[in-house]
Amino acid sequence: MSDMTDLPEITDSHCHLDFPDFEGQLEDIVARAGRAGVTRMVTICTRLRLEPQVRAIAEAHAPVFYAAGTHPMSAADEPLATLDELVALAKHPKFVGIGETGLDYHYTAESKDIQQTSLRVHVEAARETGLPLIIHSRDADEDMARILTEEFQNGAYTCVMHCYSSGAELARQMLDLGFYLSMSGIATFPRSQEVRDIFAAAPVDRILVETDAPYLAPPPFRGKRNEPAYVEKTARVGAEVFGMDYAEFAAQTQANFDRLFSKAQLKAKAA
Image 1: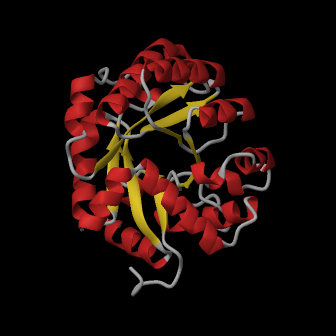
Image 2: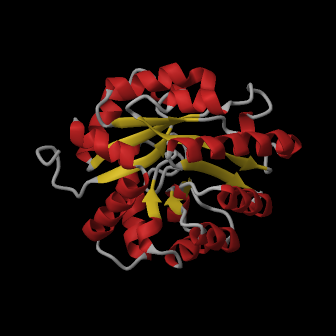
């Protein structure tokens, strides 16, 4: 993509391009991302019944890969995902991760039991397929640490804590398991010094960047619809957090993404 931009290449490791916010605009969204140096995007399916339309977006746009799972806030409303179902989806060449899954006790604590059951199914699928688990965690640090650690002891798997904004102790425990932390627009907000400190204490070879678009746009777009092109703004803050220049940090996050989402790397090279 060097003909499109002189900016360092970077990957938006987590966005939601099937959301209504982007309807009819995906050609422009992907093109703007490319002009910002964003050469890959992973769009996340949060309800498995919507997987065909998320898959179609990845099939239609060369830089877009996808993952699928049952979001914890939907776990009580959707059929429980099965191991066979997730393993079958993972056969698609552009399917690169399991999730997002996890625990959300902020909005949906009443469904914590089914969330935990769903989470363990997704862990099993990550273990079976060798694809990374994509975790959403909010106000559930203790249960999250316990379940992911128990499951890791049952058999290793890889994982990214997406949009990390939980506590320092959970971050430490996840890093100890070899997992990754993903930096979203939250890390760019003025009042997020605690989040930046957690990232600064982490190994830089375990950091990804993401938008979680359409949510959490970084400055100067805060309060507006987020999109993959804006991950560059978050990564510039990440570079400051780690005391690196932007090109160096972008290259590091690319290497990290390639290591964790190795299927996306192989597919991109084949293309």
